[in-house]
Structure formats: C-alpha cells, structure tokens
Image 1 (cartoon, rainbow, N blue to C red):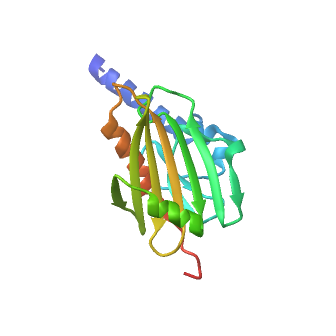
Image 2: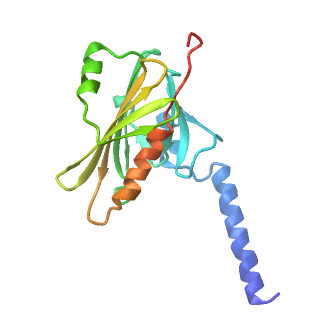
Image 3: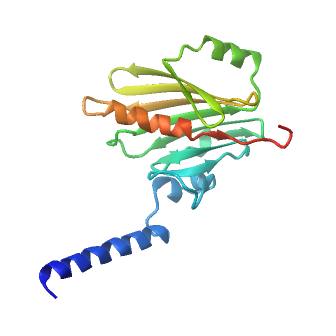
Length: 196
C-alpha cells in the first residue's frame, strides 16, 4: 500500500472512531454533560448541528437548545404547566454565540403581559411553526448584542419571552449571530393541549 492510500485509510479510521466515540457518549457537550440541563434534552431528535431538542418541564413547548449552554439550576422556576422561567449561559467566551439566554414561558397572558406585548416595538417579525415572533435588537456598551423576542402561539394565549445577551466585538459576525438566534426562535414549538 502506498503512502497516500495508507494516509487516507488512517484518516477515515480516525474520523470513524471519533464519530463512534461521540455517538456512544464519550464526548459530551456542555449541555449533555450537565446533570440538570440534560434532563430537558431529548436524544436522537433531528436538529441542526450544535443543538438538541429541549422539552419544557411544563410539557407546553419544545425548542432547539444550544449544546454549549447550561441552564442554571438556581434560576429555574416552574409552576406545573402554567409557567416556567430559566437562564442558561456558556462557559466559553470566544464564540460568536457566547453569552446568556433567559426564557419566560406563560400559558396565559395576564393583562400586564398583554400591555407589555402591545407596547413592545419590534424591529422585525418572523413566522414560526404555528407561532408569530416579534424581535427587537439592541447593543449595550458595544460589548453585547441583545435580542428581545416574543414567540406567541397562534392558537392560544401561550407565549415565550426570550432575551439573548450575546458577546460582541468588531470580530463578531452579527449576521451569523442573528441567524443563530432566529434558528432557536423559529424552532420553538408550542404543544397542543387535548382541549385545543
């Protein structure tokens, strides 16, 4: 066997072993390795690279969860199937999507929540899976890109209010960052109740 063929075989073997180790759980992402965060993740559901399907403890919504993020157990609060709030962040700070995500889910819009939504001035709107999404982008101190988003169920009063606080710099690709945020928003799906 000549050197090129041997190198090709060796390279293919290294890739195959790497894939096998990853799939067998030897290499886990931050989210998969974290005991608390991993309880929300659904293995082997189809998502894009870098995400895993997250199912809310309320069983009211599902979303694509970024695998380098970890939910802070101390931030997590849930009221049966009525509401849920959590904050997740990254340990690494050098990627374009490093930062913090906060999510607040509610099954019903209170008068105060409806007033906040009515006063919300979005920069743009997206159409998700049976949901309408309103997004506002801000910057803070030139160091953070902040996205505020309401994801409203088209068939009920359910909604999620997200805040993405992502580190930014001159090297940050803001288009890539925005695409990443939108991927999470567009893949947030409300579960249908039997009464609906």
